Image (cartoon, rainbow, N blue to C red):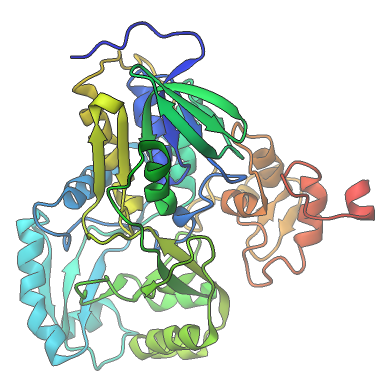
Length: 468
């Protein structure tokens, strides 16, 4: 066991680079284990990169590669999320999932899917015939040929979860610096000196959770990268809340070697989601949608659920997964240089984040030891999930600002005054759902801007409404 000595003034035990879901989970785990942690995020707010767009499913790992680190982290993360979600006030929508077969080829794959699930320890997965598929999902296209039932898949809130992880880390001593890009750094044999856009930071250990920029961070600080990020875009279509009544389970396609395919699922916010695509691109920053692809997604959704053809679309968006040349997670642990990269975490990252954090701490603990917090603070985050009590349903909320999503003034003001307030309008949306309904902020945007005032890095409005 290596001893890194007593804490020196101004030197953190751990610097986490990146405020995505993995970075937030790592900050929480290491803080609870007794480390002094600082999280560095180059954007105005956390979840500004890959983690802001995903399918929001808590996976059992039934179809993950057998024996993989991804499977181990998914199942550890799944178990820990279920253990802590009530204390952190995180939603857990029990839906189950059905892998639906739409062709003879799909049907031929179903037994192998069940076999893999059982090999992965998900024993209650079973094959079901066409009649049972339709008994579970009456609105499904009767052309379905059969399926696999996965009872323990869940839908969760993809934004409140990482916010809760980092909020708990902060409540127990972690520090967060946003608008703080790591530009260079050097290891002197004892600690890292990181040069950032907000000054120099010293930390004994660096954990690279930079997602889409993970390889560039390695190249900058270590002199070489052990992986190459290949951004993979996923476009999504969000249907109106009325569409959510058309389906109970998460509808999965028979997976392909490269992607899980297009999913049809309810969301924690009461909508219905169709997506994602899997499109390679070079741009790490921008994920644009295009009409042809969106129309194809809408058609694919309506092919599975015919009634969806008559449902309005509320929103569209696209996200980027930090894929690499290898399907497995890309972990680089260099104890001698006090370095750990947690990279190549794609769409399963939301489920696996807590498991990845535990794996990271297990690697770190081989060389450094801390004393876990005896009585850690467990702060609850506000609920914005549709199936649980919302703020507008309790007395004293003041007024409803966003009528599409029933967001109250009290919720917005609480988010702005929280320990980790939103740094930009995207962060405010992710914390409250304001401006995310049918009108996409057309009616409430000005009022939200007035309430936010100068609290965000880029004020939402100028002129009279902003000046007063």
